[in-house]
Picture 1 (cartoon, one colour):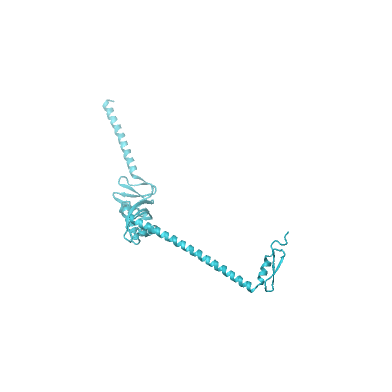
Picture 2 (spheres, rainbow, N blue to C red):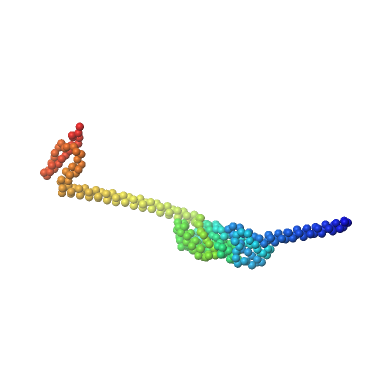
Length: 276
């Protein structure tokens, strides 16, 4: 075989090899483009030539039309965002609140959230509703009440925000991490709270003293009444003294006999007599 034929044969073999290589590469690209993986805690939204599929793709491995379809993963886990919200109290004091909002996207809203809010509705839907709800609640309370009743403010704001958002998203909780007031207002509220605590302490001390005094009076009245009843009983029944002496007699014979002055003999034992 002459050199020209050898070169021609080599080129033919090389061309076949290139064809097989290109075919394998194209096949790999098709297979790679047709498969997708949705990670745990997410759901996939399939978009084909700009059109969103009405159903979502579950987590795990799946297949789609190669090259013309794309899969966007949307988290269905509980998410947390920390934001700052400004509001006013009923006494027109500016309040700056730091909030931590816990929310999640339900499966039924995944496609709509992707279409209407590009997959993240917090900034455009949740935060405006939460801020609006907080403003409505704080507008009914004074700055002092907002500081004291933080948990109540949070509960009412959470309920209002859930109503405003509806079922499109689930707001799990709102945590008021911090409430900032002007320095002068903070000082005034703190001073008032200290005065209220001192007044409550003084009232408690006064009530305690009154209870103790009333208890002493009741006790004294009881003792006086007991003495009065006992004295009347002795007047009406002189023999009661003898009965009490008999009841308390220790078995030692008395050495002295006395008289009560009314004809009744009284036995008066002398302590120690008759003992060895």
